[in-house]
Image (cartoon, rainbow, N blue to C red; front, side, top):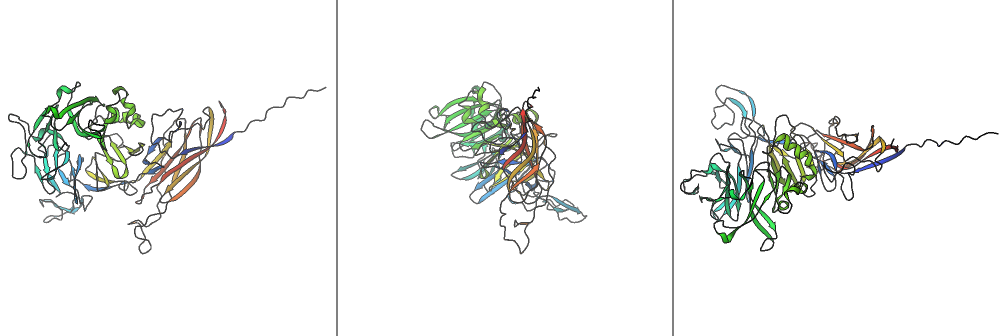
Length: 572
C-alpha cells in the first residue's frame, strides 16, 4: 500500500503590465494625494515638469532665449521695462538703477570691444572720449539719466490734449513722455506741461510718489511709505494734487504699495462695475466705488479685505477685469478674496497646485522684488521670484487658459514686458533677452524633464519591476530622447542626454541655398521609441528628458509615456 503525495501548486509566474501616462495637461502638481494621484476626472499631472509648457492637448518643450540688447556699459541689473503704444508709434524702454534707455530698435545686441587706439575712435560714444574701437548696444540711447531709482511705475493716460506716459519711482523727479520727448514732472509750470504740485505748505515733491495708475479718467498716485493716495483733476496730467488719507481704513498698518482699477461683475448698475483698489504691504485691500472722493454722493467704500502679503509692487497680473496678485498665500485673484474667508483663501489661489515650491521660493528668495506678466498672445503667465546669489534662476509659468503650471529653468528674470507680440525680460547683469526664440539660451543648451505623478498600476502593494519604457513624441525634427524610471516618489533627475545636431531644414539661416523653399516649416514627426529601463518599486513613473541645443527649436510635444513592468504578487 502506498500514499500518493499531494501535488504542489506550480509557481505562479509574474505577469507583464503596461502602465500608461498621458500627456501632463494638468501641469506641475505638488499637492495632490500621493496615494490617489489620478483621481476621477483629474487630468494627468507631473511630479516634475521643467521647461515643458502644458497645453490643452500635451506639453511642449519651451524655446530658448536670445540677447536683444545690452544696457549701458556697467552690467547693472535691469530694473524695469515699460512701453508706449499709440497707433504706429510704439516705443519700448528699459531702466537700470539710474538710467532709462530707448530700446525700441536695436542694431547691435552686445557691446563689442575690438581694441584701443591713441588718436581716434570708432566707438559709438556720445562724448567721443573713449579710446575703445567697437560698437555699443544702447550707449547713446539714454532718455533719462541720473535718476535716484530704477523702480519705475508707469501708466499710459489719454486726455483731450493727447496720449502720455507718466512715470514715478519714489526717489527722483517723475517724467511725462508725449510720444516724442521726455519731460520732467516739476512744480514750475511751463508752456506745454503744467507740472504736478502739492497743496500750499506741503514739502512733498514728485520724488515722493512711488506708484501711478489711472481710474475714472483721473491720474492717481501713492505717496511712498505712507497711507496717503493723491489724485489729479479729471482729464489732466498736471495741476494740484488732492490727498486721500486712508490710514484709518487699514487695521494692520503698513504702507500703500499698489493701486489699481478693478472691474467686478454685478455692480449696482448691472454689468461690470469699475472699482479702485488700494493695497498695503501688510496684505490688506480697500475697495472704493465712485468718481470723485471729494463728493460723498459720488464716493463710497465697498469693503476692506485680506489677501496675504504682496510680493512687491510689480507682483500682479491683470487678467481681463480681474487682478491676480502674487502674495505669501499664492497667486490670489481679487475676485476670490472678497468672497472667501482669509483662512481658506490659500486653497483658492491660482497657484495652489504648486503651493509647496511657491512657499519654498518665498522662504529662500524673499517677500519682495517678484515680477509678474501675462503674455496674452501665447496665453502664458510668468511669475519670477527675485534673483539671489546661490539660488537657481527658476520661474513659475502657467497656461492662462487651462491653469496648468510648469517651471522654466535658466531664465534669470529681473523684470518682464511684452512688446509687439514678443516676450522680453531683463537680467541681473544688464541684458535684455528675447524669450521663446531659437533652440538654446544664448548658445547654452537646456533640458526639458518630465516625471509624471507616480502610479501603482491599480495594485498598490505589488512590486513592479520595470523592463521597457515608451515615449510618444511629436516634434519638428528627430529628437534625442532619454527614458529612465523612478520609483516610490524618488524625483532625482539623472544626467541629461547629450545634444545631437538637427539636419538642415528650411528655416531662415539654417536652409541650404538654392535648394530650400523660403522659410517653409518642418512637417511634424511622430516618434514612438522604446527603451530598456530597470528598477523596481511599488509605485513607478518614467522619466523623460530631451536636451535642446540647436539654433532650431525642437518644439517637441509630449503625447504619452508608458512603462512595461513585471508585477509580482501582493505583498511581495
